[in-house]
Image 1 (cartoon, rainbow, N blue to C red):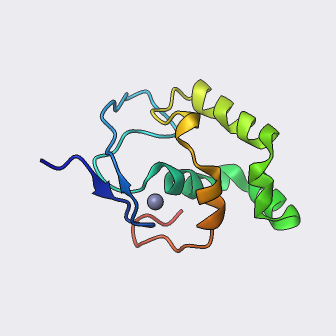
Image 2: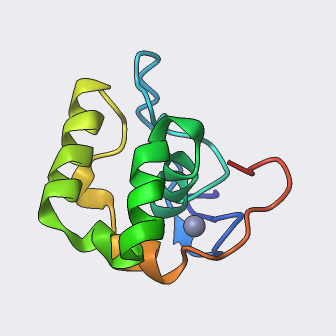
Length: 108
Ligand SMILES: [Zn+2]
């Protein structure tokens, strides 16, 4: 029985999503792929989050530690009925692994 899988980007062991609410966005429980933190990073690198990226370029990656930014993202997750709960996000890991490359097929 495979309860845990390695994230394809950072290699951390994670539990594949089980809920898989079809209405969920931006995150759905997946049977394989990225861990929660890498999935958040992938989203931040996408076109939808250009304003945040510009903020990071201007002020540094540490802006992700700012409570207002984390609160705003938690709101995005709630309104999108995401499978991912904001408490599952490890912002320190996101910051530490920001420059880690994405494997083929998972590029933002
Ligand atoms: Zn990961």
